[in-house]
Image 1: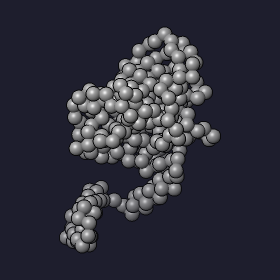
Image 2: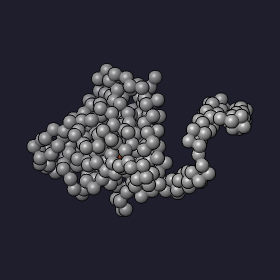
Image 3: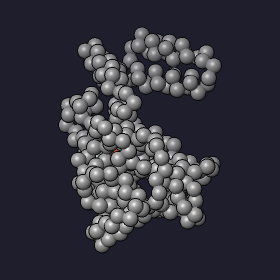
Image 4: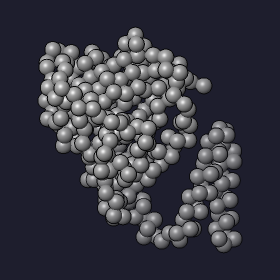
Length: 284
Ligand SMILES: [Fe+2]
C-alpha cells in the first residue's frame, strides 16, 4: 500500500467520524477499510471496476416485488449463511436456521391441518406431520407456520404467471403443538439463471442447483421466528448447494406409507412422509 492510498483510506474512514449513530459509524468505517483492502489486494483495473458497477446495476434492475436478485447474490456468495450463523448460534433443542431465499410471500389465509397445498401440481404425494416445541420439548400451541416449496419442475408459484398460493400455506399449531399437510415431494431446482447472478455462476463454472427442500417459517410470541428448510435425504446436491444452505440436522428421512385422507376428505394412496419436530428458541 502506498502512502497516498493509505491516506485516502484513512481520509474516507475519518469522513464518517461525526456520524451520530455509533453503530452506523462503525459499520461504514469497517466497510470502507475492507472495500479498499479488497481493491488493493486484487489490484482492481478500471475495466473491472466498470464491470462491477454494471453488474450491480443489472442486479438492481432485475429486482421487483417477486424477484429478489440481491438476495440471490448474497445467497450465492455465502453471505446470507454467514449473517445467519452470526445471528443464530445453535442451542440444544432449537432447530437450526438457514436462508430465507428469494421466494417467500406471506400467505393470504390460514389453512386447516391436513390440507393439500399442492393445487393441481403433479408429483409424488407427500404427507408432513410435524410439531412445534420449546427447546425442552414442551409443545407450543398457536404458533404460525408458513410453508412453501417448488413444484415438480422446480418452480415456485411466484415464478409462474397466474398462479396464486400453490405449494404455499400458513398453518397454526394445535394444543399439542402439531400441524400437518399434504403436498408433493419437492425436487432439486436451479436458482434463476436468467439474471446477472446466473451469469456470474456460469462464468466461474459453478452449477446453480439447490437440493430438494421445503421452506418453513415458524413464529410465536416470546420466541425467535425460525426460518429454516427441511432437505430431502439422498439428494445429489446436498454437498454442493448453490447457496450453501444445507445443515446436517435439517436433512430428513422420508418413510413410505400406504394411504391417508386430506382435510377435504380426499383419499391419498401410496405416498412419502416426513415426521418432524421443530424447536423454537425463546427470545433472550
Ligand atoms: Fe427454495
